[in-house]
Image (tube, rainbow, N blue to C red):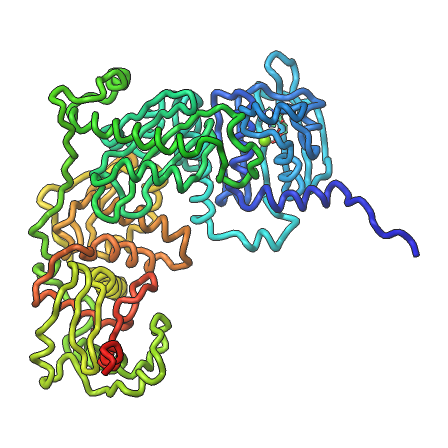
Length: 616
Ligand code: ADP
Ligand code: MG
């Protein structure tokens, strides 16, 4: 029999490699921007069309390439960045594998124009599916411009796998930020479908963060700096009172490379300790610089995890450094942070020797049930009916949506269905509710008792109410006495514009007010106790996170985010009446048994269970 093993043709090998290197437009963006940085560019321009599906172009003013290098750059394992194995342990460049361009060229139509500084003419190369289409001398500015057109044009399965434009664009913006933040001395811009999303001038880290996240960050950032033999730490954390309830902004850069590291995240979170409000996350932008020898360089290009020696020591340094910075910030709230150098030189201990914790604004008088809520959804009779039937469902367990409950078969049979929240027989019991640890509500049911998670239950109630308000196109708005301006970054501004109709339907009253700014004239009627700017920011934050993590349509996502932001929290003391109202409203919901994100809201315990425990 003939031998059957053959070497794969380069174009096939490249396409296989591309599967790992280029997962979506954002991966190509990352590779091209990193190449531009490695080329020493001081200005990098990113242009995308249709979230990168049609075009990704990166224009830099870096060192450019010779004609031969330009051709070579598309070969696999072709790199100018390492020559021998030893070099691997001193990597300071972003790339070194020599795979990116070869991979990208295998799955797209690529046009490269480049000219070295001082050369008279440049070169233009066109490649399509790894095949050279043309190569000619051309007139070009110094530096490199590379266009990737119709990514995955020859791999339809992958092209179909791409998400909606808003999701893919979000990924691109994420990658763009991950490259732009640790390189503030380089100017960056991002254009999408002819509109400018970012235009970041060269400057320092603080200016870069303000350029990306908005000028309001000027007063939110606390500088962090420490220099040790093992690690240099430099960057900013966000003041505790601006902490976000969703994950917030967490950026670690190791030798200018974005990394994720749960262990180090814990160090920062621990440094904030008691300063953060419950269930909030620290936000930070921290550059760690270590000797490349002490990290495992064999990181996959698309992975952001990294292993390094001395992890424990770095944890300890990080934690104490952030703690120290927070302490300094606290004793000097009026300090001008523009004079960063000043702060770095400050003594570690406050003059009076006392380090005070920043206080967190909590409104103890906030009562979510006090405000008269407009009835968004149903008339009373409907609600009553629904309430009653939900109770019955709870007993009969016939509701398909109750996947979250694993009730034992015998339990189901034993629960007779006549119990009812509004049943007079149980009127006396109904009034008896008990709040456990300010988190759970305990109440009688006929066959035992139930426990309701107060926060989850309220999220469910609000979620359904908001969804209903979309149908009606309008809900009650409470006008602000003093309208507030909210300045957003360009990406968020575009998002609010896209969502404006639905945001109005929820009950916000907002209008555009110049560049990247909206004015909030009014907020949904039952949210008046929240700060309007923080409320809208929180809503956006959640929305973006849901957009990336969950498959839900716009309105569902908005309703979920809004419910999350305005629901009463665990820890809130409730009166008898409030608990009863909450239970009433919960059982008036279409789907009372789970939160909008699918966690259970109610669990039940039967007397049988209790009896068994007492060996009766
Ligand atoms: P790597 O970055 O791992 O070396 P790439 O495939 O990304 O591999 O690039 C191959 C080579 O092409 C690089 O090593 C570099 O010499 C050259 N190159 C790529 N992009 C640029 C650019 N924007 N400016 C100058 N040279 C570039
Ligand atoms: Mg590269």
